[in-house]
Every structure is written in structure tokens, then in C-alpha cells.
Figure: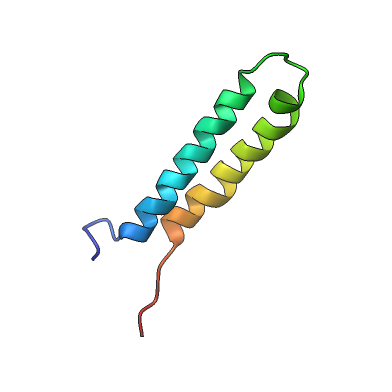
Length: 66
């Protein structure tokens, strides 16, 4: 069932996953040491994936029903 914004339950589920990935990314960014694996490698990957893949997917996803 769609609401006035045109989003359905699947869109909100993807938004939830995106929010979780972004929160983990920011958490990893704040972990010491500053030059460690979490803050230099994992955090940017999670943040880019969250902002550039999951958020647009959540907005644009449209399950087609025959």
C-alpha cells in the first residue's frame, strides 16, 4: 500500500537499512586511532555506499506488480 508520497513498506525498509549503514559508518569514523582501518577504510566505504547507493535506491525503488 502506498501513501501520499508514493513510498511503500519496501522503500521504508531500505531507508532503515541505509540509516543503519550510515550510523555504523559514522561510528567507525569516530573510532581511534585516527589512522586505523576503521576510520580510514571501512567508514568511507560504508558512508559512500549508504549515501550513493542505498538512499537513492530507497527513493527510486518501485516494485512492479503485474
